Amino acid sequence: MNADQLGDEVTDQLNGRFTDRLADVVAGVSDPEIDVGLRDLGVLRSVSLTDGRIRVHLTPTRISCPAVGEIARRVRSALAEAAPGYGIEIVWERGAWQPAAVTVAGRDALSRGGYRVAGTASSCPYCGSEDVEQAGRFGGAVCKVPYDCRGCGSTFDVIGTAGCTAMLPTPEPVRGGSR
Ligand SMILES: [Zn+2]
Image (cartoon, rainbow, N blue to C red):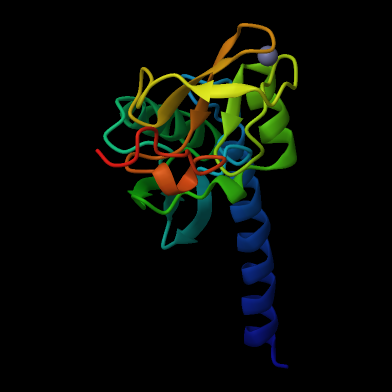
């Protein structure tokens, strides 16, 4: 290995460490609606650095959710503070979010906030009862489906994406047959 190659390798390693640090900065940004970091929420896909430009790939848990603008604003502001002078590009990968990308810490935090992630057991986050019933098609945001718990009377939201019936915790039996 010659000096140039060694220099390149050192540069690569430093860039890698810097990129990791930037990814941690983005991970520390929380969702405006749910107080969970973007990595724990499965929203942060990747952070890369090319020619002085930071590119952040995010995938929204909701489609056409107004929070997307606020998330982008928070990410830009956090990165501008951590890495002044770098260009920032945010790339939204719509429809790519998967409930499986939510970390254990993220699931815990969501559960404390009264949310369930689609794809997990459809039990009540408050009392653990499985005697729950879907209370409507959508909640306040397109991505949320409200559920009622018959065990403790609480309502809670299951998070998915728009058109996300496939991501609901358990397939709902179609009442009354066809529609
Ligand atoms: Zn309950």
